[in-house]
Length: 70
Image 1 (cartoon, rainbow, N blue to C red):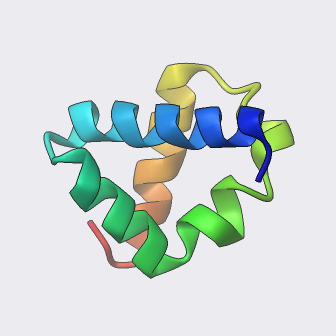
Image 2 (image 1 turned 45 degrees about the vertical axis):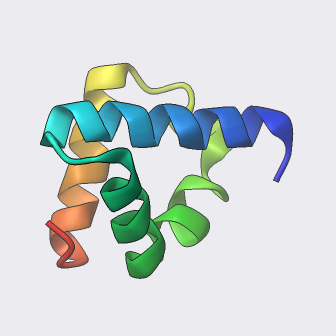
Image 3 (image 1 turned 180 degrees about the vertical axis):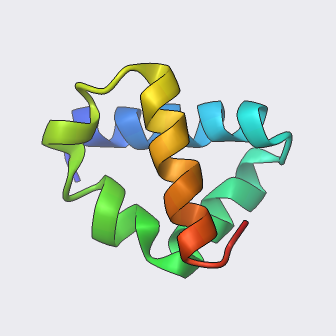
């Protein structure tokens, strides 16, 4: 994972933490456990980083619901 992708992952976890009112460690655990982190966020960085913050949060929370971690 390159530096830009790592910064984006950190950004996503931080924003989701605030949005979901969950600790960052818990958000990370859920994203990793569900496969969203390494099977969706990291490989899709090129597209996802162009989304608005609001759309990104909506997309990730919907996907977390689909995966059963929300």
